[in-house]
Image 1 (cartoon, one colour):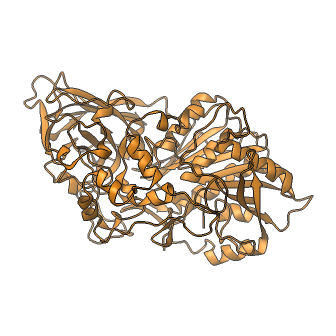
Image 2 (cartoon, helix red, strand yellow):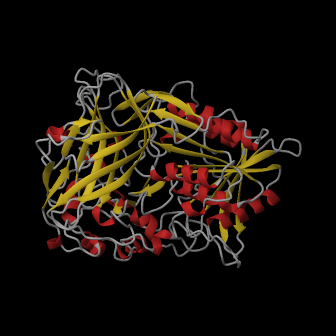
Image 3 (cartoon, one colour):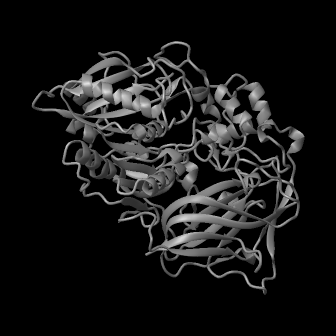
Length: 638
Protein backbone atom coordinates (compact mmCIF):
# COMPACT_ATOMS: atom_id res chain seq x y z
CA UNK A 1 0.00 0.00 0.00
CA UNK A 2 1.09 3.56 -0.64
CA UNK A 3 1.75 5.77 2.36
CA UNK A 4 -1.30 8.00 1.96
CA UNK A 5 -3.49 5.26 3.48
CA UNK A 6 -5.39 6.13 6.64
CA UNK A 7 -6.80 4.01 9.42
CA UNK A 8 -10.54 4.50 9.76
CA UNK A 9 -13.19 2.51 11.63
CA UNK A 10 -10.54 -0.09 12.41
CA UNK A 11 -9.89 -0.69 8.71
CA UNK A 12 -7.35 0.69 6.31
CA UNK A 13 -9.14 2.98 3.85
CA UNK A 14 -7.32 4.15 0.76
CA UNK A 15 -7.25 7.85 0.03
CA UNK A 16 -6.84 6.72 -3.54
CA UNK A 17 -9.62 4.33 -4.53
CA UNK A 18 -9.10 1.48 -6.90
CA UNK A 19 -11.70 0.49 -9.48
CA UNK A 20 -12.72 -2.94 -10.63
CA UNK A 21 -12.21 -1.85 -14.24
CA UNK A 22 -8.49 -2.59 -14.51
CA UNK A 23 -7.19 -3.32 -17.98
CA UNK A 24 -6.16 -6.91 -18.55
CA UNK A 25 -2.69 -5.97 -19.83
CA UNK A 26 -1.79 -4.30 -16.52
CA UNK A 27 -0.03 -6.47 -13.92
CA UNK A 28 -2.20 -7.73 -11.09
CA UNK A 29 -1.50 -6.90 -7.46
CA UNK A 30 -0.38 -10.49 -6.91
CA UNK A 31 2.12 -10.14 -9.76
CA UNK A 32 3.32 -6.87 -8.24
CA UNK A 33 3.73 -8.49 -4.83
CA UNK A 34 5.71 -11.37 -6.31
CA UNK A 35 7.91 -8.91 -8.19
CA UNK A 36 8.75 -7.04 -4.99
CA UNK A 37 9.80 -10.21 -3.14
CA UNK A 38 11.72 -11.59 -6.10
CA UNK A 39 13.59 -8.39 -6.93
CA UNK A 40 13.99 -6.38 -3.72
CA UNK A 41 15.48 -6.95 -0.28
CA UNK A 42 14.01 -5.05 2.65
CA UNK A 43 15.89 -3.59 5.60
CA UNK A 44 14.79 -1.37 8.48
CA UNK A 45 16.76 1.34 10.26
CA UNK A 46 16.48 4.13 12.79
CA UNK A 47 18.09 7.20 11.22
CA UNK A 48 19.39 9.81 13.71
CA UNK A 49 18.51 13.46 13.18
CA UNK A 50 20.77 16.33 14.22
CA UNK A 51 18.92 16.80 17.52
CA UNK A 52 19.27 13.10 18.42
CA UNK A 53 15.71 12.07 17.47
CA UNK A 54 15.61 8.81 15.52
CA UNK A 55 13.20 8.26 12.64
CA UNK A 56 12.06 4.78 11.63
CA UNK A 57 12.85 4.01 8.00
CA UNK A 58 12.30 1.06 5.67
CA UNK A 59 14.55 0.50 2.66
CA UNK A 60 13.83 -1.69 -0.37
CA UNK A 61 17.01 -2.30 -2.39
CA UNK A 62 17.12 -4.09 -5.76
CA UNK A 63 18.75 -7.51 -5.37
CA UNK A 64 20.89 -6.99 -8.44
CA UNK A 65 22.44 -3.76 -7.13
CA UNK A 66 26.23 -3.91 -7.16
CA UNK A 67 29.32 -1.81 -7.52
CA UNK A 68 28.82 -1.85 -11.28
CA UNK A 69 25.00 -1.62 -11.19
CA UNK A 70 24.04 1.25 -8.91
CA UNK A 71 20.55 2.65 -8.41
CA UNK A 72 19.16 6.04 -7.39
CA UNK A 73 17.20 6.47 -4.18
CA UNK A 74 13.56 7.53 -4.24
CA UNK A 75 11.99 8.42 -0.91
CA UNK A 76 8.64 9.11 0.68
CA UNK A 77 8.26 10.57 4.15
CA UNK A 78 4.83 10.05 5.69
CA UNK A 79 2.67 10.50 8.77
CA UNK A 80 0.48 7.57 7.65
CA UNK A 81 2.76 4.64 8.60
CA UNK A 82 5.42 2.72 6.68
CA UNK A 83 3.73 -0.60 7.49
CA UNK A 84 4.09 -3.52 7.20
CA UNK A 85 6.67 -3.50 9.98
CA UNK A 86 9.27 -6.26 10.11
CA UNK A 87 12.18 -6.92 7.76
CA UNK A 88 10.47 -10.10 6.52
CA UNK A 89 7.17 -8.37 5.72
CA UNK A 90 7.03 -6.78 2.28
CA UNK A 91 4.88 -4.18 0.60
CA UNK A 92 2.83 -5.36 -2.38
CA UNK A 93 3.94 -2.34 -4.40
CA UNK A 94 6.96 -0.10 -3.86
CA UNK A 95 7.88 3.24 -5.46
CA UNK A 96 5.32 5.64 -7.00
CA UNK A 97 4.03 3.14 -9.58
CA UNK A 98 4.46 -0.41 -10.82
CA UNK A 99 6.24 1.01 -13.87
CA UNK A 100 8.95 2.61 -11.76
CA UNK A 101 9.06 -0.42 -9.49
CA UNK A 102 9.97 -2.56 -12.47
CA UNK A 103 12.62 -0.09 -13.62
CA UNK A 104 14.05 -0.46 -10.12
CA UNK A 105 15.06 2.18 -7.63
CA UNK A 106 16.22 2.01 -4.05
CA UNK A 107 12.86 2.81 -2.44
CA UNK A 108 12.78 4.41 1.02
CA UNK A 109 9.81 5.08 3.33
CA UNK A 110 10.05 6.96 6.61
CA UNK A 111 7.71 7.64 9.54
CA UNK A 112 8.01 11.37 10.30
CA UNK A 113 8.57 12.74 13.79
CA UNK A 114 6.11 11.64 16.43
CA UNK A 115 4.35 9.13 14.17
CA UNK A 116 4.15 5.37 14.42
CA UNK A 117 7.61 3.89 15.05
CA UNK A 118 9.54 7.15 14.94
CA UNK A 119 10.64 9.14 17.96
CA UNK A 120 9.82 12.77 18.67
CA UNK A 121 6.69 14.90 18.97
CA UNK A 122 4.10 15.20 16.20
CA UNK A 123 3.26 18.64 14.82
CA UNK A 124 0.75 19.43 12.10
CA UNK A 125 2.36 21.39 9.25
CA UNK A 126 5.68 21.79 11.03
CA UNK A 127 6.69 25.47 10.89
CA UNK A 128 9.68 26.05 8.64
CA UNK A 129 12.74 27.56 10.31
CA UNK A 130 14.55 29.62 7.66
CA UNK A 131 17.74 30.38 9.58
CA UNK A 132 18.70 27.42 11.70
CA UNK A 133 21.35 28.22 14.31
CA UNK A 134 21.24 25.32 16.75
CA UNK A 135 20.90 21.54 16.56
CA UNK A 136 17.49 21.93 18.17
CA UNK A 137 16.30 24.03 15.20
CA UNK A 138 14.66 21.21 13.29
CA UNK A 139 11.85 21.08 10.74
CA UNK A 140 10.85 18.86 7.83
CA UNK A 141 13.59 20.21 5.57
CA UNK A 142 16.31 19.49 8.14
CA UNK A 143 14.92 16.00 8.74
CA UNK A 144 14.94 15.44 4.98
CA UNK A 145 18.55 16.65 4.73
CA UNK A 146 19.69 14.42 7.60
CA UNK A 147 17.86 11.42 6.14
CA UNK A 148 19.42 11.90 2.70
CA UNK A 149 22.87 12.33 4.23
CA UNK A 150 22.53 9.04 6.12
CA UNK A 151 21.12 7.16 3.11
CA UNK A 152 23.88 8.28 0.76
CA UNK A 153 26.52 7.17 3.26
CA UNK A 154 24.92 3.94 4.50
CA UNK A 155 22.85 2.35 1.73
CA UNK A 156 25.09 0.29 -0.51
CA UNK A 157 25.23 0.70 -4.26
CA UNK A 158 23.32 3.98 -4.57
CA UNK A 159 24.34 6.24 -7.46
CA UNK A 160 24.44 9.41 -5.37
CA UNK A 161 21.12 10.78 -6.65
CA UNK A 162 17.96 11.07 -4.56
CA UNK A 163 14.38 11.82 -5.52
CA UNK A 164 11.27 12.17 -3.39
CA UNK A 165 7.53 12.05 -3.87
CA UNK A 166 4.37 11.95 -1.81
CA UNK A 167 0.62 12.41 -2.11
CA UNK A 168 -1.45 14.64 0.20
CA UNK A 169 0.31 15.04 3.57
CA UNK A 170 3.33 13.14 2.19
CA UNK A 171 3.13 15.65 -0.68
CA UNK A 172 3.63 18.39 1.88
CA UNK A 173 6.67 16.55 3.24
CA UNK A 174 8.02 16.35 -0.31
CA UNK A 175 7.75 20.10 -0.92
CA UNK A 176 9.02 20.94 2.58
CA UNK A 177 11.86 18.50 1.94
CA UNK A 178 12.64 20.29 -1.31
CA UNK A 179 13.97 23.10 0.91
CA UNK A 180 16.64 20.76 2.33
CA UNK A 181 19.13 21.84 -0.37
CA UNK A 182 21.07 18.61 -0.04
CA UNK A 183 23.40 18.29 -3.07
CA UNK A 184 22.24 14.71 -3.71
CA UNK A 185 18.58 15.74 -3.99
CA UNK A 186 17.92 15.93 -7.73
CA UNK A 187 14.14 15.57 -8.17
CA UNK A 188 11.03 16.19 -6.07
CA UNK A 189 7.42 15.50 -7.00
CA UNK A 190 4.99 16.93 -4.43
CA UNK A 191 1.59 15.49 -5.37
CA UNK A 192 -1.60 17.02 -3.96
CA UNK A 193 0.66 18.86 -1.48
CA UNK A 194 -0.71 21.00 1.33
CA UNK A 195 0.53 24.58 1.28
CA UNK A 196 -1.43 26.38 3.99
CA UNK A 197 -4.02 24.86 6.34
CA UNK A 198 -6.06 28.09 6.41
CA UNK A 199 -6.80 27.78 2.69
CA UNK A 200 -6.37 24.06 2.02
CA UNK A 201 -7.70 20.89 3.62
CA UNK A 202 -9.04 22.00 7.00
CA UNK A 203 -10.14 25.47 5.88
CA UNK A 204 -11.23 27.18 2.69
CA UNK A 205 -10.71 30.93 2.99
CA UNK A 206 -10.99 30.50 6.75
CA UNK A 207 -14.25 28.53 6.66
CA UNK A 208 -13.89 25.24 8.51
CA UNK A 209 -14.00 22.11 6.34
CA UNK A 210 -16.56 20.21 8.40
CA UNK A 211 -16.34 17.30 5.98
CA UNK A 212 -13.09 16.34 7.75
CA UNK A 213 -14.83 15.95 11.09
CA UNK A 214 -14.00 12.25 11.42
CA UNK A 215 -10.30 12.86 10.65
CA UNK A 216 -9.37 14.77 13.81
CA UNK A 217 -8.33 11.75 15.90
CA UNK A 218 -5.69 10.88 13.28
CA UNK A 219 -4.12 14.34 13.48
CA UNK A 220 -4.90 15.46 17.03
CA UNK A 221 -3.78 12.68 19.40
CA UNK A 222 -0.15 12.21 20.45
CA UNK A 223 1.24 8.71 20.87
CA UNK A 224 3.28 7.89 23.98
CA UNK A 225 5.53 5.15 22.59
CA UNK A 226 6.55 3.55 19.28
CA UNK A 227 3.53 1.78 17.80
CA UNK A 228 2.64 -0.40 14.82
CA UNK A 229 -1.12 -0.12 15.40
CA UNK A 230 -3.34 2.99 15.67
CA UNK A 231 -3.15 4.71 19.05
CA UNK A 232 -6.19 6.89 18.41
CA UNK A 233 -9.90 6.03 18.20
CA UNK A 234 -12.32 7.27 15.56
CA UNK A 235 -15.58 8.50 17.07
CA UNK A 236 -18.69 6.36 16.70
CA UNK A 237 -21.53 8.53 15.37
CA UNK A 238 -24.28 6.07 16.35
CA UNK A 239 -26.07 6.49 13.03
CA UNK A 240 -25.65 5.85 9.32
CA UNK A 241 -27.28 9.20 8.57
CA UNK A 242 -24.41 11.67 8.36
CA UNK A 243 -26.66 14.61 7.61
CA UNK A 244 -28.66 14.07 10.78
CA UNK A 245 -25.49 13.44 12.78
CA UNK A 246 -24.08 16.84 11.88
CA UNK A 247 -27.44 18.55 12.31
CA UNK A 248 -27.84 17.08 15.78
CA UNK A 249 -24.44 18.37 16.90
CA UNK A 250 -25.63 21.93 16.39
CA UNK A 251 -23.07 24.69 17.05
CA UNK A 252 -19.42 23.63 16.86
CA UNK A 253 -18.95 24.33 20.57
CA UNK A 254 -21.07 21.21 21.18
CA UNK A 255 -18.65 19.14 19.10
CA UNK A 256 -15.79 20.31 21.30
CA UNK A 257 -17.54 19.19 24.45
CA UNK A 258 -19.00 15.92 23.10
CA UNK A 259 -16.16 14.60 20.96
CA UNK A 260 -12.89 16.53 20.87
CA UNK A 261 -12.36 18.20 24.22
CA UNK A 262 -8.91 16.58 24.51
CA UNK A 263 -7.97 16.63 20.82
CA UNK A 264 -5.08 19.07 20.52
CA UNK A 265 -5.55 19.76 16.80
CA UNK A 266 -9.28 20.46 17.16
CA UNK A 267 -8.52 22.83 20.02
CA UNK A 268 -5.88 24.59 17.92
CA UNK A 269 -8.61 25.18 15.33
CA UNK A 270 -10.99 26.48 18.00
CA UNK A 271 -8.48 28.83 19.60
CA UNK A 272 -7.19 30.22 16.29
CA UNK A 273 -10.28 31.11 14.23
CA UNK A 274 -8.43 33.82 12.30
CA UNK A 275 -5.27 33.85 10.21
CA UNK A 276 -3.02 34.71 13.14
CA UNK A 277 0.65 33.90 13.74
CA UNK A 278 -0.20 30.28 14.55
CA UNK A 279 -1.41 29.64 10.99
CA UNK A 280 0.92 32.10 9.27
CA UNK A 281 4.04 30.30 10.44
CA UNK A 282 2.60 27.07 9.00
CA UNK A 283 2.25 28.63 5.57
CA UNK A 284 4.99 27.07 3.45
CA UNK A 285 4.65 29.38 0.44
CA UNK A 286 6.89 32.25 1.69
CA UNK A 287 9.74 29.76 2.19
CA UNK A 288 9.80 28.37 -1.37
CA UNK A 289 13.06 30.03 -2.37
CA UNK A 290 16.51 28.84 -3.49
CA UNK A 291 15.16 25.55 -4.83
CA UNK A 292 17.78 24.39 -7.33
CA UNK A 293 16.76 20.83 -8.21
CA UNK A 294 13.95 19.66 -10.51
CA UNK A 295 10.36 19.81 -9.26
CA UNK A 296 7.18 18.38 -10.78
CA UNK A 297 3.95 19.37 -9.03
CA UNK A 298 0.97 17.05 -9.55
CA UNK A 299 -2.69 17.67 -8.80
CA UNK A 300 -6.25 16.78 -9.74
CA UNK A 301 -8.88 19.19 -11.04
CA UNK A 302 -11.47 17.42 -8.87
CA UNK A 303 -9.39 17.15 -5.71
CA UNK A 304 -11.74 18.01 -2.85
CA UNK A 305 -8.85 18.11 -0.38
CA UNK A 306 -5.78 19.71 -1.91
CA UNK A 307 -6.36 21.85 -4.98
CA UNK A 308 -5.07 25.12 -3.54
CA UNK A 309 -1.70 23.55 -2.70
CA UNK A 310 -0.51 22.28 -6.10
CA UNK A 311 -1.51 25.41 -8.00
CA UNK A 312 -0.12 27.90 -5.51
CA UNK A 313 3.06 25.95 -4.80
CA UNK A 314 3.80 25.74 -8.53
CA UNK A 315 3.17 29.46 -9.09
CA UNK A 316 5.22 30.46 -6.04
CA UNK A 317 8.15 28.26 -7.05
CA UNK A 318 7.97 29.68 -10.55
CA UNK A 319 8.04 33.25 -9.26
CA UNK A 320 10.78 32.78 -6.65
CA UNK A 321 13.10 30.40 -8.52
CA UNK A 322 13.59 31.60 -12.09
CA UNK A 323 15.58 29.14 -14.13
CA UNK A 324 14.78 26.14 -11.94
CA UNK A 325 13.16 23.15 -13.67
CA UNK A 326 9.63 23.47 -12.29
CA UNK A 327 6.65 21.88 -14.02
CA UNK A 328 3.01 21.13 -13.23
CA UNK A 329 0.61 18.30 -14.10
CA UNK A 330 -3.14 18.68 -13.54
CA UNK A 331 -5.37 15.76 -14.52
CA UNK A 332 -9.07 14.79 -14.31
CA UNK A 333 -8.50 13.25 -10.90
CA UNK A 334 -9.91 13.25 -7.42
CA UNK A 335 -7.49 13.23 -4.51
CA UNK A 336 -4.51 11.10 -5.52
CA UNK A 337 -6.43 9.12 -8.14
CA UNK A 338 -3.47 9.27 -10.53
CA UNK A 339 -1.80 6.61 -8.36
CA UNK A 340 -4.47 3.99 -9.12
CA UNK A 341 -5.58 2.83 -12.55
CA UNK A 342 -9.36 2.58 -12.92
CA UNK A 343 -9.36 1.42 -16.53
CA UNK A 344 -12.40 3.43 -17.62
CA UNK A 345 -11.60 6.64 -15.78
CA UNK A 346 -14.51 8.39 -14.07
CA UNK A 347 -14.91 11.07 -11.49
CA UNK A 348 -18.32 10.59 -9.96
CA UNK A 349 -20.59 10.23 -13.04
CA UNK A 350 -18.29 11.82 -15.62
CA UNK A 351 -16.21 9.62 -17.93
CA UNK A 352 -12.84 11.02 -19.07
CA UNK A 353 -11.34 8.21 -21.12
CA UNK A 354 -9.37 5.02 -20.63
CA UNK A 355 -6.06 4.39 -18.85
CA UNK A 356 -5.67 8.04 -17.84
CA UNK A 357 -3.69 7.14 -14.71
CA UNK A 358 -1.47 4.74 -16.62
CA UNK A 359 -0.63 7.47 -19.12
CA UNK A 360 0.39 9.77 -16.26
CA UNK A 361 2.41 7.10 -14.44
CA UNK A 362 4.24 5.77 -17.49
CA UNK A 363 4.57 8.79 -19.79
CA UNK A 364 4.96 11.62 -17.27
CA UNK A 365 5.97 10.51 -13.77
CA UNK A 366 8.35 7.67 -14.74
CA UNK A 367 9.92 9.83 -17.44
CA UNK A 368 10.52 12.70 -14.97
CA UNK A 369 12.29 10.57 -12.37
CA UNK A 370 14.18 8.53 -14.94
CA UNK A 371 15.62 11.66 -16.56
CA UNK A 372 16.81 13.28 -13.34
CA UNK A 373 17.82 10.22 -11.36
CA UNK A 374 19.12 7.80 -14.02
CA UNK A 375 19.83 9.80 -17.17
CA UNK A 376 21.63 13.06 -17.90
CA UNK A 377 19.39 15.24 -15.71
CA UNK A 378 20.13 18.22 -17.96
CA UNK A 379 16.49 19.36 -17.94
CA UNK A 380 15.79 18.17 -21.50
CA UNK A 381 13.29 15.63 -20.25
CA UNK A 382 10.91 15.84 -23.19
CA UNK A 383 8.13 16.93 -20.82
CA UNK A 384 6.32 20.27 -21.19
CA UNK A 385 6.14 23.04 -18.64
CA UNK A 386 2.48 22.26 -18.03
CA UNK A 387 0.49 19.09 -18.71
CA UNK A 388 -3.15 20.17 -18.32
CA UNK A 389 -6.19 17.97 -18.87
CA UNK A 390 -9.13 19.76 -20.46
CA UNK A 391 -12.03 18.35 -18.44
CA UNK A 392 -14.61 19.50 -21.02
CA UNK A 393 -13.00 18.16 -24.19
CA UNK A 394 -11.52 15.31 -22.15
CA UNK A 395 -7.99 15.40 -23.51
CA UNK A 396 -4.47 16.35 -22.39
CA UNK A 397 -3.08 19.72 -23.46
CA UNK A 398 0.49 20.92 -23.12
CA UNK A 399 1.73 24.46 -22.56
CA UNK A 400 5.15 26.09 -22.53
CA UNK A 401 4.10 28.35 -19.67
CA UNK A 402 1.45 28.57 -16.99
CA UNK A 403 -0.53 30.70 -16.34
CA UNK A 404 -1.07 31.12 -20.08
CA UNK A 405 0.01 34.62 -21.07
CA UNK A 406 -2.15 34.68 -24.21
CA UNK A 407 -5.33 34.02 -22.20
CA UNK A 408 -7.98 36.69 -22.62
CA UNK A 409 -9.58 37.96 -19.42
CA UNK A 410 -13.36 37.89 -19.72
CA UNK A 411 -16.15 38.78 -17.31
CA UNK A 412 -19.35 36.78 -17.00
CA UNK A 413 -21.89 39.26 -15.62
CA UNK A 414 -24.99 38.46 -13.58
CA UNK A 415 -28.21 39.90 -14.99
CA UNK A 416 -31.85 40.00 -13.93
CA UNK A 417 -34.05 37.01 -14.67
CA UNK A 418 -31.11 34.68 -14.01
CA UNK A 419 -29.19 35.57 -17.15
CA UNK A 420 -25.40 35.36 -17.49
CA UNK A 421 -23.61 37.23 -20.25
CA UNK A 422 -20.28 38.80 -21.20
CA UNK A 423 -21.88 42.26 -21.43
CA UNK A 424 -22.39 44.27 -18.22
CA UNK A 425 -25.88 45.18 -16.99
CA UNK A 426 -27.21 48.57 -18.10
CA UNK A 427 -29.51 51.17 -16.61
CA UNK A 428 -32.48 49.56 -18.32
CA UNK A 429 -32.32 46.53 -16.04
CA UNK A 430 -35.65 46.10 -14.33
CA UNK A 431 -34.25 44.21 -11.37
CA UNK A 432 -31.23 45.60 -9.53
CA UNK A 433 -30.62 42.54 -7.35
CA UNK A 434 -31.62 38.95 -6.68
CA UNK A 435 -32.32 37.92 -3.10
CA UNK A 436 -32.91 34.85 -0.99
CA UNK A 437 -33.38 33.94 2.66
CA UNK A 438 -30.55 31.89 4.15
CA UNK A 439 -31.45 29.83 7.21
CA UNK A 440 -28.57 28.05 9.01
CA UNK A 441 -31.15 25.66 10.47
CA UNK A 442 -32.07 24.49 6.96
CA UNK A 443 -28.76 24.62 5.10
CA UNK A 444 -28.15 23.84 1.44
CA UNK A 445 -26.55 20.38 1.17
CA UNK A 446 -23.29 20.05 -0.72
CA UNK A 447 -24.29 16.65 -2.12
CA UNK A 448 -27.22 14.34 -2.71
CA UNK A 449 -25.07 11.32 -1.86
CA UNK A 450 -25.69 10.63 1.82
CA UNK A 451 -23.31 7.67 1.78
CA UNK A 452 -20.38 10.11 1.81
CA UNK A 453 -21.42 12.20 4.81
CA UNK A 454 -19.71 10.05 7.46
CA UNK A 455 -16.60 9.27 5.49
CA UNK A 456 -13.07 10.17 6.45
CA UNK A 457 -12.99 12.71 3.64
CA UNK A 458 -15.40 13.74 0.90
CA UNK A 459 -14.57 13.36 -2.79
CA UNK A 460 -17.30 13.05 -5.38
CA UNK A 461 -19.05 16.40 -5.04
CA UNK A 462 -16.36 18.25 -7.03
CA UNK A 463 -18.03 17.21 -10.32
CA UNK A 464 -21.50 16.40 -8.98
CA UNK A 465 -24.79 17.24 -10.70
CA UNK A 466 -26.11 20.49 -9.18
CA UNK A 467 -29.75 20.21 -10.28
CA UNK A 468 -30.73 19.43 -6.70
CA UNK A 469 -29.31 22.78 -5.57
CA UNK A 470 -30.79 24.78 -8.46
CA UNK A 471 -34.26 23.76 -7.26
CA UNK A 472 -33.84 25.40 -3.87
CA UNK A 473 -35.16 28.92 -3.16
CA UNK A 474 -31.96 29.81 -1.26
CA UNK A 475 -29.71 29.21 -4.30
CA UNK A 476 -29.41 31.85 -7.04
CA UNK A 477 -28.87 30.59 -10.57
CA UNK A 478 -27.51 32.54 -13.54
CA UNK A 479 -26.85 30.95 -16.93
CA UNK A 480 -25.89 31.89 -20.46
CA UNK A 481 -27.81 31.21 -23.62
CA UNK A 482 -26.89 27.99 -25.38
CA UNK A 483 -23.31 28.35 -26.63
CA UNK A 484 -22.93 28.55 -30.39
CA UNK A 485 -19.22 27.69 -30.24
CA UNK A 486 -16.78 26.12 -27.80
CA UNK A 487 -15.46 28.32 -24.98
CA UNK A 488 -12.35 27.15 -23.10
CA UNK A 489 -11.58 28.57 -19.68
CA UNK A 490 -7.92 27.99 -18.91
CA UNK A 491 -6.47 29.69 -15.86
CA UNK A 492 -7.49 31.77 -12.89
CA UNK A 493 -11.04 32.63 -11.75
CA UNK A 494 -12.14 35.52 -9.54
CA UNK A 495 -15.61 36.06 -8.13
CA UNK A 496 -16.48 39.75 -7.73
CA UNK A 497 -19.79 40.12 -5.92
CA UNK A 498 -21.71 43.16 -4.76
CA UNK A 499 -23.87 42.00 -1.89
CA UNK A 500 -25.95 43.14 1.05
CA UNK A 501 -27.48 41.25 3.95
CA UNK A 502 -29.90 41.91 6.79
CA UNK A 503 -27.37 40.22 9.08
CA UNK A 504 -23.82 41.12 10.10
CA UNK A 505 -21.94 38.15 8.61
CA UNK A 506 -22.52 35.73 5.75
CA UNK A 507 -20.83 33.10 3.63
CA UNK A 508 -20.82 33.25 -0.15
CA UNK A 509 -20.46 30.07 -2.16
CA UNK A 510 -19.93 30.51 -5.91
CA UNK A 511 -20.13 27.49 -8.22
CA UNK A 512 -19.15 27.40 -11.91
CA UNK A 513 -21.26 24.78 -13.70
CA UNK A 514 -21.36 23.15 -17.15
CA UNK A 515 -24.98 22.59 -18.18
CA UNK A 516 -25.29 19.69 -20.62
CA UNK A 517 -27.84 19.77 -23.44
CA UNK A 518 -31.07 17.92 -22.77
CA UNK A 519 -30.27 15.36 -25.45
CA UNK A 520 -26.88 14.37 -23.95
CA UNK A 521 -26.74 10.54 -23.94
CA UNK A 522 -25.41 8.54 -21.01
CA UNK A 523 -21.99 6.99 -21.53
CA UNK A 524 -21.45 3.25 -21.29
CA UNK A 525 -19.89 3.30 -17.80
CA UNK A 526 -22.47 5.22 -15.77
CA UNK A 527 -22.16 4.04 -12.15
CA UNK A 528 -25.80 4.84 -11.29
CA UNK A 529 -28.67 3.92 -13.58
CA UNK A 530 -30.95 6.56 -12.09
CA UNK A 531 -28.70 9.42 -13.31
CA UNK A 532 -29.21 10.94 -16.75
CA UNK A 533 -26.64 13.22 -18.39
CA UNK A 534 -29.33 15.03 -20.35
CA UNK A 535 -29.53 18.43 -18.62
CA UNK A 536 -26.76 17.46 -16.18
CA UNK A 537 -25.35 20.44 -14.26
CA UNK A 538 -21.73 19.41 -13.74
CA UNK A 539 -19.89 21.45 -11.15
CA UNK A 540 -16.56 22.51 -12.64
CA UNK A 541 -15.23 24.76 -9.88
CA UNK A 542 -16.50 26.16 -6.59
CA UNK A 543 -15.34 28.02 -3.50
CA UNK A 544 -16.58 29.53 -0.27
CA UNK A 545 -15.78 32.98 1.14
CA UNK A 546 -16.59 34.22 4.65
CA UNK A 547 -17.63 37.89 4.68
CA UNK A 548 -15.76 38.60 7.90
CA UNK A 549 -12.49 37.99 6.04
CA UNK A 550 -13.28 40.21 3.01
CA UNK A 551 -10.64 42.78 3.96
CA UNK A 552 -8.27 40.72 6.11
CA UNK A 553 -8.02 37.08 7.11
CA UNK A 554 -6.17 38.19 10.22
CA UNK A 555 -8.64 40.83 11.42
CA UNK A 556 -12.29 39.90 10.78
CA UNK A 557 -14.90 42.62 10.39
CA UNK A 558 -18.67 42.61 10.72
CA UNK A 559 -20.91 43.62 7.84
CA UNK A 560 -23.18 46.62 8.16
CA UNK A 561 -26.76 45.43 7.70
CA UNK A 562 -28.29 46.21 4.30
CA UNK A 563 -25.20 48.05 3.07
CA UNK A 564 -23.92 47.13 -0.39
CA UNK A 565 -20.47 45.59 0.08
CA UNK A 566 -17.93 44.17 -2.38
CA UNK A 567 -16.89 40.57 -1.75
CA UNK A 568 -14.02 39.50 -4.03
CA UNK A 569 -12.23 36.17 -3.85
CA UNK A 570 -10.38 33.62 -5.92
CA UNK A 571 -11.71 30.28 -7.00
CA UNK A 572 -9.04 27.76 -7.92
CA UNK A 573 -7.90 27.52 -11.53
CA UNK A 574 -9.71 25.57 -14.20
CA UNK A 575 -9.04 23.98 -17.60
CA UNK A 576 -12.43 23.23 -19.07
CA UNK A 577 -14.09 23.64 -22.45
CA UNK A 578 -17.77 24.48 -22.37
CA UNK A 579 -18.79 22.87 -25.62
CA UNK A 580 -21.10 24.12 -28.31
CA UNK A 581 -24.67 23.30 -27.31
CA UNK A 582 -23.88 23.55 -23.57
CA UNK A 583 -24.52 26.48 -21.24
CA UNK A 584 -22.40 28.13 -18.54
CA UNK A 585 -24.13 28.44 -15.19
CA UNK A 586 -23.17 30.14 -11.94
CA UNK A 587 -24.89 29.35 -8.66
CA UNK A 588 -24.63 31.49 -5.52
CA UNK A 589 -25.64 30.29 -2.06
CA UNK A 590 -24.68 30.85 1.58
CA UNK A 591 -24.63 27.39 3.16
CA UNK A 592 -22.86 24.26 1.93
CA UNK A 593 -23.52 21.68 4.61
CA UNK A 594 -21.90 19.62 5.99
CA UNK A 595 -18.88 20.15 3.75
CA UNK A 596 -18.31 23.44 5.57
CA UNK A 597 -19.46 24.75 8.91
CA UNK A 598 -22.37 27.15 9.08
CA UNK A 599 -21.96 30.87 9.48
CA UNK A 600 -24.25 32.18 12.27
CA UNK A 601 -24.99 35.21 10.03
CA UNK A 602 -24.67 37.25 13.20
CA UNK A 603 -21.11 38.46 13.65
CA UNK A 604 -19.46 36.75 16.63
CA UNK A 605 -15.85 36.87 17.74
CA UNK A 606 -15.30 33.13 17.31
CA UNK A 607 -17.71 30.94 15.31
CA UNK A 608 -16.29 27.81 16.98
CA UNK A 609 -17.66 29.14 20.27
CA UNK A 610 -20.96 30.53 18.96
CA UNK A 611 -24.17 29.70 20.84
CA UNK A 612 -27.30 28.28 19.25
CA UNK A 613 -29.12 31.61 19.55
CA UNK A 614 -26.37 33.29 17.49
CA UNK A 615 -27.51 31.44 14.37
CA UNK A 616 -30.16 33.52 12.63
CA UNK A 617 -31.99 33.75 9.34
CA UNK A 618 -30.90 36.55 7.04
CA UNK A 619 -31.99 37.98 3.72
CA UNK A 620 -29.11 38.20 1.26
CA UNK A 621 -29.01 40.26 -1.90
CA UNK A 622 -26.64 39.83 -4.84
CA UNK A 623 -26.61 42.95 -7.02
CA UNK A 624 -26.49 43.05 -10.81
CA UNK A 625 -27.03 46.74 -11.49
CA UNK A 626 -25.08 49.04 -13.77
CA UNK A 627 -23.23 50.66 -10.86
CA UNK A 628 -23.17 47.55 -8.68
CA UNK A 629 -22.39 44.68 -11.03
CA UNK A 630 -21.50 41.18 -9.89
CA UNK A 631 -19.47 38.92 -12.15
CA UNK A 632 -17.06 36.05 -12.49
CA UNK A 633 -13.74 36.97 -14.11
CA UNK A 634 -12.27 34.11 -16.13
CA UNK A 635 -9.44 33.51 -18.57
CA UNK A 636 -10.38 32.30 -22.05
CA UNK A 637 -7.85 30.47 -24.23
CA UNK A 638 -7.90 29.09 -27.77
